[in-house]
Image 1 (cartoon, one colour):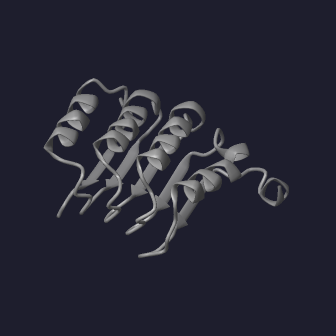
Image 2: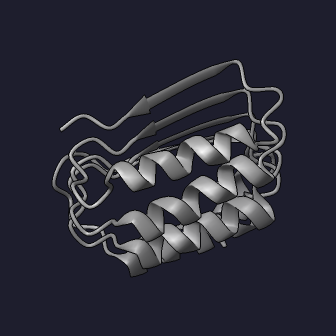
Length: 148
């Protein structure tokens, strides 16, 4: 893999796919798999997929699994899935669970799910419950976006 050869000490990764770029679950999964050799070394991850109509609970679930099993050294996590209409309560719950139960070193967390209409009050209550029983003892800053 080219990245392994050129970036053997990669610790920070920011990927912004802009407004309206069509990324599917398979695209998200392949992207995460492509960076798989670096996931345990990452301390900062920022992913932005605004208006991605192809991302569903399947892609979010895969990200959640990788977060909980390989990205345990993260201290800064920012995820933007605003206006992604196919993400529902299930994907949001999976992601919330992975973040609050497995990312013990996390200091800064930013989640943007603005205008994701399938996330309802029940999903937000679930997030609140997870934060209440969370292992995020090092968390210093928290930004949550659910407008719309």
